[in-house]
Image (cartoon, rainbow, N blue to C red):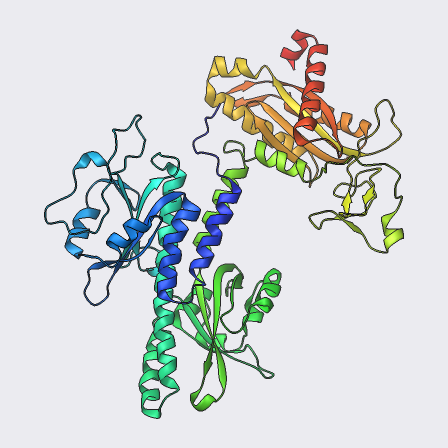
Length: 557
């Protein structure tokens, strides 16, 4: 069997990290962006201190531009400057954690000619291997965005972090999160600088004709050679939103020539599901994350930000749209979210995701059958649950459960189980608890690789044997759970038999054919129960079924 290789990542932590990354791009100035980056390390990455060292474009050295977490240390080093040579030496020391640099307290890295601004703390020796020492240092370099969004450009600055709240060196996920955070911070700082430059150019455009001509050339170069996509569109009138001009970066991103881009507006290019997001985006400073269509028919995730550009003497106004490629960030977010909610071996929903899906169907009050025979007839529209999902009260998969009732206060459709001792055709949410028989002997005789192969194949057979919309989850070890909505008692029994017959077929593992059996317990979910109570009920029924079968028959199965 496999061992869990990464810590469980709470979805709330991912949402918080995503929120902080979004706030980076909405700050009003470069100074606000830098402070947002520093504060985000504290709020989203769980460090107690963070320092932003920014490369000064003219001088090339690094200045402490923002600090968060400790007012005394902030007063001590904010505004101090470290030479580029000292920083280069610092980043070439210590341990390389991907793009990160970790310098342990044991390295003795403070040099006589090292002028890198820092705060001094000391403490006792670590009690265990990965305990954080007050003199440990962790650096996350930030680079200007390179080609196709890669971090291969010039050094933009360095994020210094200290004092993880859990007192330990960050693990694999923590390192990847800090590295991804530094990558997104570099983009936000670069964009803030670009926006500042463009705003200064726009101010000059409004003053006098001579300054206008000089500023137009400056704007043209900033527009044409910007590392991310830019477009100018009409504002107001019948042609509102039509693209007048697009830079080379945007044309490459969408695989469309500039001449073709002029035939479209952004509403023509946006994914149909994101039209509402585009329409809700404010013209003045609005920002949205949505998908734009490429020439080959695929879509790419972008961050779209609008600014209003006025011609001289308050003439015609245009929309300046900044389009940033965030495909890689979205991919990583989806990967992290999937790891948090799915089993790494089988790809099935894990225990936490199973409980979440089950809990979303249950409220604390028990349902009462027969309160409302047809909500459609009474209210003239379908019923909806707390999450906005519709129910048709027909008992079909994906609809309401059998004899469900309606709570007029929270619009929740109660989940009601078929009554014990009766088979009157009522339908409910069946919870099938599956435990494999004879699995331990396969691990013992043929090894964990064979056991893993069996689990993967069992997961595939279970998934193949249920309907679309049903949930197959791995609870842990050799235990699986199926949530099947809209089933009667006989339906649930038939499903358990079919799945068991699928599982007992020979499985190819490590070059040999092996067989396992399966015991099923069928529980029924209803409001008033917790998810754990539902699972415990099904688990107990599974053990009753397992004990009722002869031991030799279980092995044969």
